[in-house]
Length: 445
Image 1 (cartoon, rainbow, N blue to C red):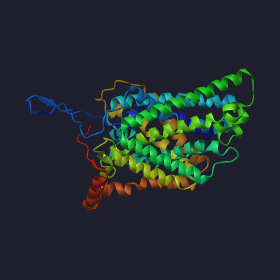
Image 2: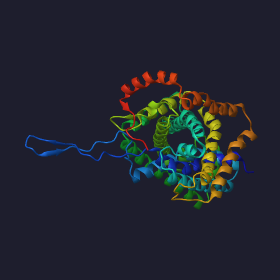
Image 3: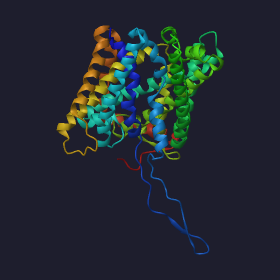
């Protein structure tokens, strides 16, 4: 029997393709270098050219290879190694399980086509944030940034680093589950390191991403080849391994790659670390754009004077992520807010349809049939309503209250631009600016 939980488990992971393909690219703000060169005369009368100065804004330091690594590394996170257990458990057999993954792949392709049109039509930074503002106005964009910046992005960052910590510590506890305090301390350390790397240099973050994406692809190849070998040998243990495993890939390594079983959790740890790095990168850019548009505090839109990175936005996301690893039920938080994520996916697809009528003058280098966006929107509505109808719980109401609770701040601080709020924030912004050595961007899009 088809269950929405099966579809959602697989779709949450595979649908990342449609989100990350343009989100990762659009989160990095554009930049230009100053064209003028300052000449200075030396003692011999010869002019000596100084190197061109960079504009005080985010720089385009990510090349083609690094961009692909960032997209792939962010798309393939911890879920692809963990969710097969739940999908197989709910589907009950390998055949239906593969059909579900295939259906989710088709959904992801349709979503990717929608993002292709939106991303080439609206070239501003912010991904869904910019699309929703253009289609539905400032209020919907604010609610998206409020929910994503405050909950979805940092909690996702936290859960990925927790997965990294679990797999990284697994080889040291072969006979038992790693202690919770070890996992959380290792997770917090990973958050600090990743946030620090992204604050220091975009190029350094891209080099880190390249390395861990390569490691991620290696372990995926190992898993695929091992699966093909098992199928060729007609070994019927795959379903048992997946359905009974507490940690899929650790058990897979023990059963299939026994002599080098320790390699599996190691490479999965590499995979999750790379995914966390990509998550941190995109989260910082979203906070930066929201701050620039006035939907978040202005300090989040400031840029490091030395490193040309959105340091305040990255630090804010890292601090929230550390806060989210403290409770023991972060998975519950993710599950309850996932319906909000699908709501925004649906709104993004709907924005494509709306702008076909309201923004006819926009240039569309990529144009997809409207029914594709309609399918994505309908599936998103189903995945929003299905868990609420199937098993209504108060937590869904709490999440909804939190999302719309942002309106309490929107009207006085964003819409009316209350003077008292600016008076309070001015000295705070000034001290933080001096502490972090950050400045407002020199130019915007």
